[in-house]
Amino acid sequence: MARAATTADAFNAVAEPRRREILDVLAGGERPVNDLVPLLGLAQPQVSKHLRVLREVGAVDVRDEGRQRLYRLNGHALKPIHDWVKNYEGSWSERFDQLDVVLEDLKQKEDGDGGSE
Amino acid sequence: MAGVSSGTATVTLPTDEQILITREFDAPKHLVYKAWTTPELVKRWWSGHRAEMTLAEIDLRVGGMWRYVMVAEGGFEVAFHGEYREIVPNERIVTTEVYEMPEAPEGEAPLNIVTFTEAEGRTLLTLLTQCPSKEVRDLIINSGMEGGMQEGMDLLEQVAISLR
Image (cartoon, rainbow over all chains, first blue to last red; front, side, top):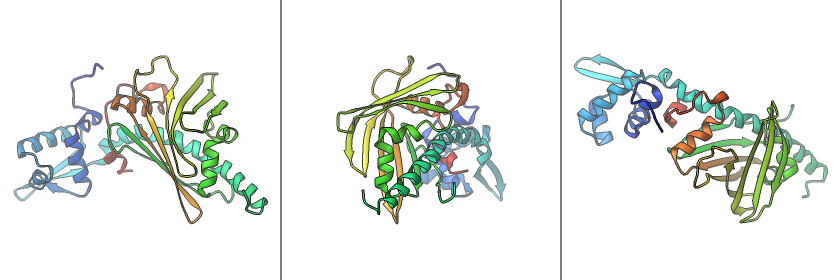
């Protein structure tokens, strides 16, 4: 499938498994790069490269504290992805709401039968 | 409706090839299973509000086929079918699920694994869709989108969903 060779949107940025791992770790709180290196088992230049891609799409924010650079997750940038799945979730929610009504009928029918099958 | 305590459906993407839907129901599992596997009952809920189901055929045995057809707004017909691979009454159903469309990807059909777990009269339902590829998985998610505006979109991940 033809696809633009860009990492400039959130979907592409998180298409890389290592970057998703980074986001998973950062979901637990702010971290310096040095924490990520042993957790991911990658060399620091690679981790920095992934962090740069994530920063470009705004998926992570960075701030300096002393001589450390601290990275943290920015959920807003990932909202398009969230919305993508949310729509699918919505269609199932609607289905299940209907199923609730069917189940309520079945329960009442069972109660009416004195609980027998 | 009073007395109906509905849960919230949750969709997560455990791997690139999977979709996991979970939902709790205020009913014992034998009733959820019944509603899931009885044609007249399936017809009442499976299409949601936006379509009318015109066919629900269920041959509930291993190797048996099922087929659902619904007509969406504007007369657009949507059909799915599959084959039962595993059936444990009131517990677990494994079926293939094929979306009948001309441009459907060739090859292996996605597999749906449904489990029903009861606790204190309530049932936790899990529906795991195992796709042959990420492309197929993404197509299924996209099917929930209007007008295919997200077509061709690449990935996502659970981390995003955990940020709700």
